[in-house]
Image (cartoon, rainbow, N blue to C red; front, side, top):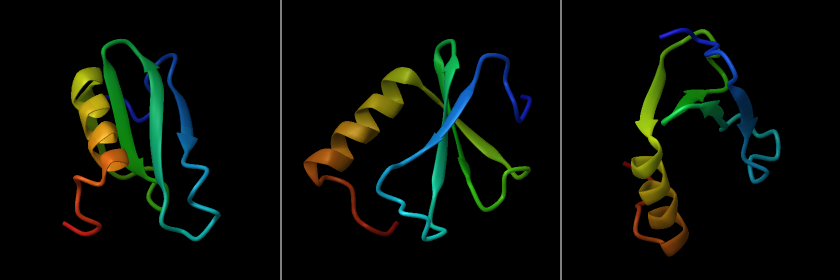
Length: 69
């Protein structure tokens, strides 16, 4: 998969505040959400289905995901 999928728009969390602990999310790829470490833009990216990403975000917001894995 290309590091720059056609139509993808990368964004960072507004909560990162430039502290270097950023994850970038690429929206705009049909059926997929791509995630990468902003400190390594040419490194690997993870790809999730929209449903899996939505479940992850809901879990984070509900406090169901530990701070560290």
